[in-house]
Image (tube, rainbow, N blue to C red; front, top):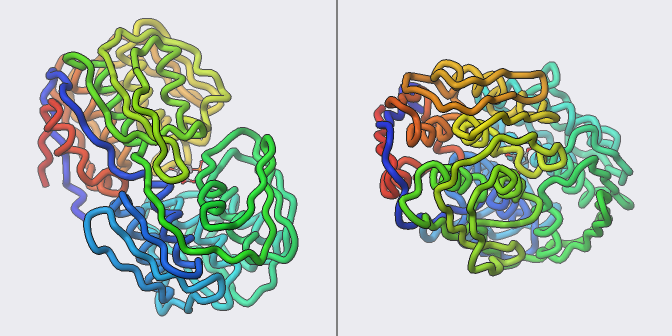
Length: 436
Ligand code: S3P
């Protein structure tokens, strides 16, 4: 990976026509993980071929799962069953992907062999005890490195179900526990303090595993066989958020974003932008497998600042970098609170966004759990993404309304979630160049 990759984005321009969103990252990870431990074949359409999801795919291959990729977005997984994985011959490299690592911790807890999970410098700084702690209560033996990766999971343990109240609203931790629950004796119950994305629950049901959900309580029991199935991955609402805000800042007329997953556990960004006055029309609602999708027609809007309701934070957790950009161009003040989780994402997204916004002249003040932004726009300049894909894409979109050009350093990791971003954005009107 070249650290020097950068975006140069000329200011101004407008968004026009339409773009189609690539597959959802969270759903793609789960499709190959569950496909791998299912019995029979799982066929996946619109799989996101990003570095993060390919890390999960590579880990499953390294444990003996045959996976074919016959065409763009097509993946065929020859499942080996719950107990058919083989010991990997080397540490499993999860790259930049927190989802790959934490879900795999749950998976490895139930295996007969040991495995070590490693990651890139960013992932190696992220907290893993939040997943290790409940898994240990289930009987797993897990060693972290001062709470972080590398993580070694010792195989051959017998797991038992637990009832566990999550300390943080984290879909990754919830999923790790539920996946270990597949291997556990008895019933596993997770209580979440706020609603988080429910792709694991939905997909396990698609594989034939009964999962009960009632309010914030999720329950499954061990020993069920996953049956291979057909999955269509919905478009990624987190990727679409960059284009939604781009359209709000600078749509020529109705700018159309096609194939956006609108699972209600992911649509916090649409609710927050609506409170800011955004003109976003959700049209052509339909289903992609077990997940709802729609097209979004976005009209240029002068947004207004708001106090972001805290219950929407977990439902928009990956969208705050681009939301901060939207707030910087809004009229009035936007306050984000209750979002301290942003500090342990691919970068410290509160610190890194505040640094970049302030460098570009925006009035942004970081707080321990969020940010206060007084709208008023920004000028051009050079910022760094600190290797964080969503920071890089957010500052690229900011150029639409900044008074000068914006250069963003260290953008190679955009490929972890959205490999075609620059080309797609250029085609729709953003004056972006990627140089290496
Ligand atoms: C994800 C859950 C979220 C999110 C991440 C993907 C998932 O992380 O930020 O990008 O696929 O389960 P947390 O569980 O840490 O909130």
